[in-house]
Image (cartoon, rainbow, N blue to C red):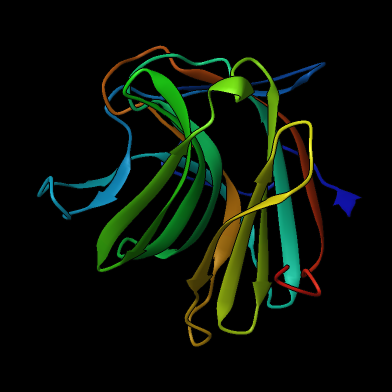
Length: 191
């Protein structure tokens, strides 16, 4: 994997503030920022912050950030984006008193899968998106081996962008420190 600039790309919904510091890129989310389409809650949100670059087929992207946020529904990670109704985000969201590793796949409507990862708190988290053909393989880790989070369909007829993202649906003041971004070839196997 090859290291990339944390500031490269175009913002989908620019955040309140970004600051390049020695440790990485500090991104401060706007209040009431989120990505969601209809399911269960009924609402549509398209106000989260994502710094996007082209995402070619047969390539992979990894992002690393510090999980140090503790407010309901604050979250950060990677996002693959085509348009307002076709996108995937994966990362760690603080929900119901604990950090939750999860993914939201949206094709007109959103779904959400989560698993608690309380031992990941206050550590660096890595998410890896690997695009190959009609699939996006999502992996994550925290000081250990990669674990499969999700295998999701990805429409090959669409143009896709990818990048770091964060959102804070219920409050102001979320700041996320992204420390690393890398790109390289797609994973050679699912397992």
